[in-house]
Length: 115
Image (cartoon, rainbow, N blue to C red; front, side, top):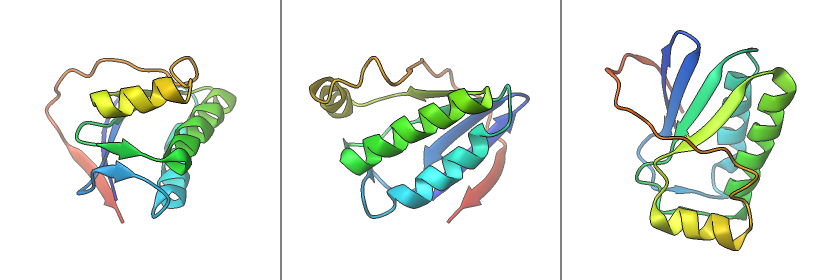
């Protein structure tokens, strides 16, 4: 479900072979992301490129992981949001709650794929 690339203290994550973050697998994604942010000092960047839709449970995942990262002393940021997802964030008034950044391409070394 998640494609994870780790280099030093930065971890890049993206959803593998899906284009939405919704109720069907949000709990699984939440648990996997929470594990990644538990390492103090790590920066986890969640690449949402190609994700066309996020429902309320998906946004709940992003908020829960953001809060968990703060408690663990790590960072959790989103990048490559589609216009549709940005619009949903504005409608739900979440643009101040969720950190965003720009992603530069990196040479990927896949650490693991989680189902």
